[in-house]
Length: 362
Image (cartoon, rainbow, N blue to C red; front, side):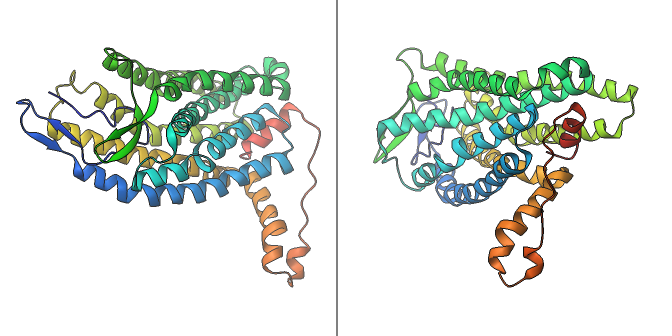
């Protein structure tokens, strides 16, 4: 049974009409519906994600740098999370993927490799920094004394650099194995594994993606939040209750948006073991990958919304920023707008201010 493997990895390949064969190896399995859905749906989706994700995460970066002044380890991790969304999932790759979805790959082999590696880097870095944010909250609440020495800006920068290094290593296979190839009448950018080991490499990389991006983070977060909840039950502190809320919401939203995609890709890769290697099941899994990946892309637009609705301080900074940089230019003749002044930023950093910052959302 020959199965089409164009969607076996989370790459952005949108192939032309593809065929696989049912168990009798004589009846072609057309997947024009999957390809038509991708070519019509993905380009406008990528455009919307590009606009809203870029604006939202750029505001997060602006507020963290200009108003928060990066006073704590939490600020450093939030900054890296926002930058990973902007650089790795928005500004650079999305216009290329939008064109590819509607037409074919015309950007050459080097860009195919770079953008594929960048895509995986965005996936891994987003998850890794959410893990660091969770561990940061765990240390601040469960091991408060130790956190006085460990939760510093310097350690935040060092751990961020190490994490980016791990992210690059985890993303290397995407850069190495992706290349362009003529398929039918169009050029595609897709993974091509060493001859004779295609299946093994494919399964290994999908397992790696699910282990690093889903299972290990889930175990770490369950452990950290179980300990946090246990600590909070012993000392009823409203500030500490608020301190957990932002990172917990970020974690839950991440899994809601990314878990379906990870599961769909895992099922597609191991469909033979799951007795789903027939034409109908293969087409349904490919469509599930397309839809779940589209949903996952919106995750990067959601984090700024979480900050705005969960974090009181973030809302205040956002309001001040809009008054100072947007409303003033839209309504130059409104003295009331120009009279708005920002509250001074306190430069002194203490553990209590760190908890107040994170409890307020940023």
